[in-house]
Length: 366
Image 1 (cartoon, rainbow, N blue to C red):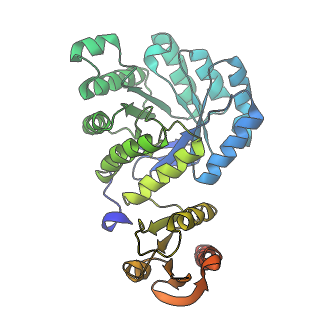
Image 2: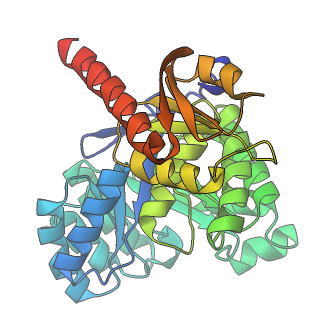
Image 3: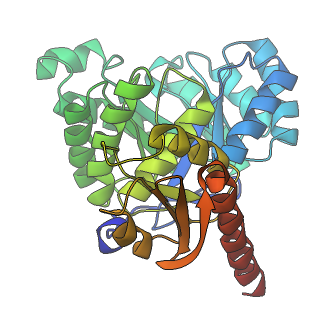
């Protein structure tokens, strides 16, 4: 793990999203959201299966209408991971989602239709023993709060989120997860820091509408990395304009990079230079694709020459270090064999699979 081990975590309450614990020092939970039509149960369940395979531990689906609400029960029944219903404006849809078996419901109490309707949703969630997620982003702060704070400042975001929480607390409901997000990293960081000082509810992290994969990943990695290293955050979604599977893979990459959790392989690869005798970019891309099928934590080094290759290979579980016409395959710095260039990927993956079998065997014996 990066940085000498995982950072100490902020102390929060514990909630349960189906069988997945959240908060109170439970592992930081990775989630995403489907982008299929929810009423298309086949497409939605197929996508949920793919994001679960990629490492999503819970999944959120939009429930914007009655057709989606009717489909939710089937989705919940067949989903391999807990399903969270995303509700806007309708207490009726929130209650129907709870009755359909949603493991958590995301609402904004301020737009659900008044105190009595909020109470009905809270009572239904309490009876079902499921949490509610509430919160705000920089585009949903109330006009009153915007006027009071002079805009969507971090202080305004925090106050708006706590206003939503107070509505539920007045209903006697405290099984709450809070999300507070902005579309830029600095405001997201400051907002979450301030909120963490003022409550002990579990926090959902993310940069809202972060953007396309490249820029969105950079913003999300910065904001979430800073907060996670400070022990803030109990669950996260990386919101990218791309396939949700990529959101999940990026989330796991961020968690591994900051030393919080690791699922599957991490690649160490050199940036290439004129010393390389093979197409390092192509080889690394091939390795990255092949490693997507590997589930155990493992470090794989793909190095282009003997300058840094041997040193990096010593720290990697499995490594390939290229040389003219081929390369050397090693495990923890021990050279196993020399392989011609066309066989490098196959030879590397044979050793990766051997490590995977060993570690899965160790887990089975524990």
